[in-house]
Length: 115
Image 1: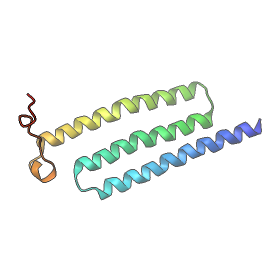
Image 2 (image 1 turned 45 degrees about the horizontal axis):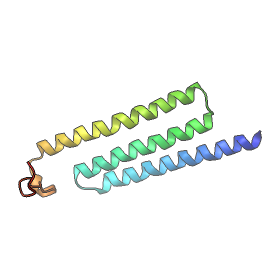
Image 3 (image 1 turned 90 degrees about the vertical axis):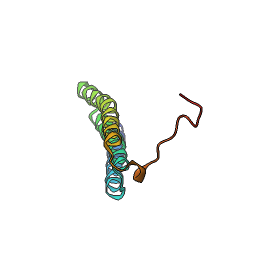
Image 4 (image 1 turned 30 degrees about the vertical axis):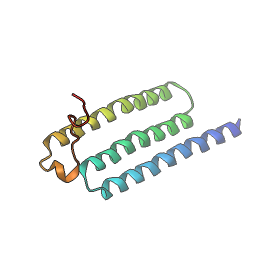
């Protein structure tokens, strides 16, 4: 039985370390990118994936019980809410950007033959 506990501990620790590494990469991306949408993308992807990995590690270490179910539901909630909130903030940035040609170019839909 001790071998199973060690395997759970090692697997859970691996997920926790992977989640922490993702958070470090996220912080590097947030500080290195210059444009706000690039920073926001790095932060949103890092948060979603990093928190997911850390919580999966905690689920593995805790064993499968009611607390693990609650942690899984937190993962599901974060995976639905974080991309939606990031998308809304990105749309607000694009709509209120005073110098859009500095950051991106808009495609002309009439040139493509679309409506």
